[in-house]
Length: 83
Image (cartoon, rainbow, N blue to C red; front, side):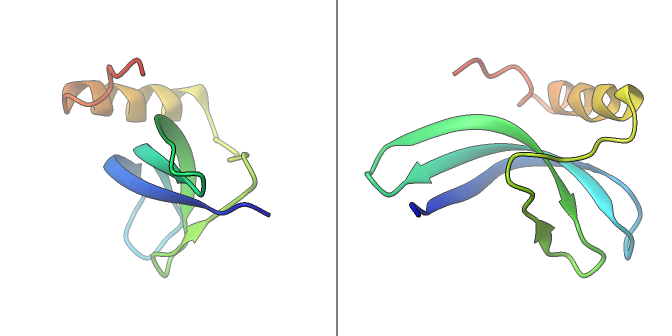
């Protein structure tokens, strides 16, 4: 199975330290063949700080959470990429 390296370029989070935290990230995906793509993802961070990879799925509790994280990205100047 091909490996993809993900480099987080920007991030905003919703949650409390020591608890599960929902992250919205702008990332660079680096593929084994040398190509790269940028894009956004939602991903959960465990209480120990590690990320929970979920094969393309992240349960998001509410649309309000989506809107909050996306609006923080826009306010931070990194939420308007269209690559």
